Amino acid sequence: MSKLFTPVTFGPLTLRNRTIRSAAFESMCPGNAPSQMLLDYHRSVAAGGVGMTTVAYAAVTQSGLSFDRQLWMRPEIIPGLKKLTDAVHAEGAAAAIQLGHCGNMSHKSICGVTPVGASSGFNLYSPTFVRGLKKEELPEMARAYGHAVNLAREAGFDAVEIHAGHGYLISQFLSPYTNRRKDCFGGSLENRMRFMDMVMEEVMKAAGTDMAVLVKVNMRDGFRGGMEMDETMQVAKRLEQSGAHALVLSGGFVSKAPMYVMRGQMPIHSMTHYMNCWWLKYGVRMVGKWMIPTVPFKEAYFLEDALKFRAEIKMPLVYVGGLVSREKIDEVLNDGFEAVQMARALLNEPGFVNRMREEEKAICNCKHSNYCIARMYSIEMACHQHLNEELPAGLKREITKIEAKG
Image (cartoon, rainbow, N blue to C red; front, side, top):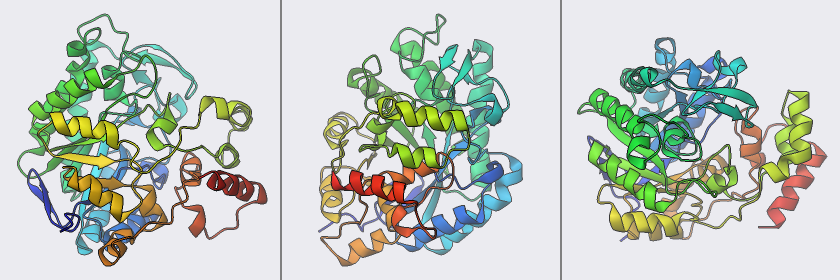
């Protein structure tokens, strides 16, 4: 019998089934506040049968913003978020929110200050100079995560997902590629985990006994000089000791190896079409295919590494990465993972979970062109198959060419 439509429990939270909409950035929050579009999308996924939907990616401080259409957790937005969670709950699903800080992947024009990170330097991603956080600033930054958990509870969320992967702030402390500190927060892995430990202490204290805590972690950073499995396994075991209720197993750095996270080819012409900054538009158009190299897509592309974590880690694990069929989801659950996360499949078809209930061989119609990702850097994430507007001919040709490659 399939485990897919059986309940699963993470700490104090029980989901109606084992599917979770992963925390893929929606870009639906102009003014750093929730919009009706954000509410409507998450309500559609909840109505489509998912066990829990995760709102992404909410900055715990203003300095943690990497996009101008991204949530910033603060008291003023709580009423809007409460409307969203009420709508999700009315459809029978649970609601989670991903909390994080982008670290060095921002710009003063977006976050209001010189971007901060584990170490000082220059970040080509923005591009901008970055200031390393001072040792005495770290406790306050950790407390910001705990404060955001309390705001999430006030907004009606059932769970939080702490972002400790993908090259965001916690990940920047963990990775030797971005952490070049000479104090007790740099050097050895034990030192590089100190900031994560501080954050998790604040998060678990704030979560108490009524909120589930998931943590997204890298299994590999996805490039030479980054973290590999010998260290990331130790990070996972430390998070298990911290009391987290589940780990979401992922990989990659969005500023260094973005397609390791998402796989496939980035449609550069589509990406630059929506950009407003003329010099960035033409710069990315000229060098984008070298800056964002293709990594071939295959279904369940993280599964081989995730199985190694399953063999070592006792706590609940959530699999994410390239799931588009009921058959593969059943396989992943039978391999011992407590739940699965999906993003692109549920953007293409918000009702995919309900269809899987009816069809044992259900496969979603996502073609893996990554148009949705290319678009989200400038305007709201959307699947090209369901747009209200007509795409320009050049974008159509690019998407068709990418999809033909499989």
